[in-house]
Length: 335
Image (cartoon, rainbow, N blue to C red):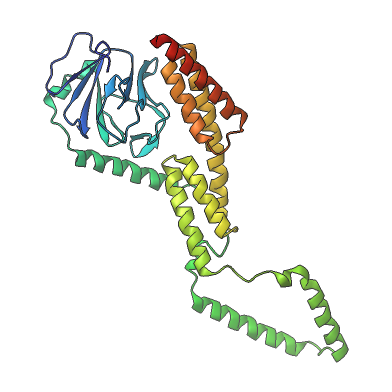
């Protein structure tokens, strides 16, 4: 932790300090009650020695996130962490942070306050972790409800909820009416001769072709297993764990290739992974141009994690080469 950028106090009622631009208060976690006085427009949060705001949280990455003051206000960005940043009911990579809002790194919940309003922390009671968790759950539930209004991709009859709710009695009634109609219609038509009947049966047999060798309908057990993989994948996708989501959707399709929802979200996950890699590489280049070598390294390594199963990818090789260069430069500056 840099004493020039951030000062840490265990007293939650610490008066406003000289040079203070913002402060962070820990509401939940191993460092609960601690106050971090921010005196710089860019700081790093994590559990490593190089972090300006250092927490004793094993689920937090060494350099987990960066807080920057920009033209649009304060912005919190993920630095390629393993567990991401939980904010307003979802895991998110980058977002604007306003005074009075809270976010989670690992198991640690931070409350943020800008300098002009930070004195309000002195009079406001420390919110409990339970209260904050309830608020996050409410945010998450609201987002799920909003997402449910979106039209889902068309699914096969064997897996759609409507098919599962179909009343068997309705099927029996429809079949009975169809049979009655067919019977009455047959009585009104002339009977085919034996020769014509034989020819018709032969044509029907020939028209079946390869379809006669296809397996029957998918079993209920297979549908159930594929659905379990799909639901797990969707949970991972909703939390922006695109790689894990992709793996689950692929398993669902291996079990039941006709699972159209799994096929749809597999394509979406692959597109999101490509976009995430692109954004991380752009952020790494910007950090490199600004001389923030450690930030650039974090972004490049985050992109490499998204491409770990495709290490011949030119973008993976590019990131690997840049990380080597940064390591050499960091080693040179330490000497």
